[in-house]
Image (cartoon, rainbow, N blue to C red; front, side):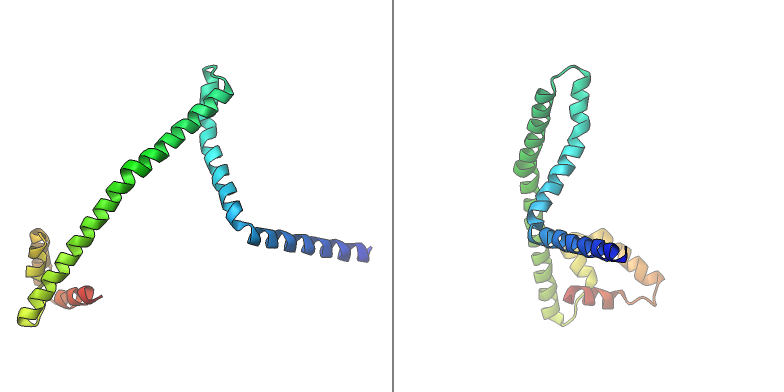
Length: 151
């Protein structure tokens, strides 16, 4: 009886090892299977909704997948280019900001937070920073600002 328990444990460990090795070698395929399960799980209620109105299941599935593909195409063609454009504009803004900071720093050797914020159109933030500086004198905002710019 003791031998059968040991034999079962050995078989279980070998099986577990084979499963782990299989997952390790085929993890890229398992990712696609997992994504497919998630998509199917999310689209299943929509397919069932079509069944309520006596739409054949095959047609309902085809309509749902056509809609899903249409949404992915819209995402790729409309939303992603807008995100790319905004990222490029932000990059240009940051480069301009850094150039302005370095120009101000080169003139007098120090970085003036007020003029730096005004140079990129953040006048209101500059006013708020002055208010914070006046009320909380123990906080060295200029020191943190210089540290932020260098990092």
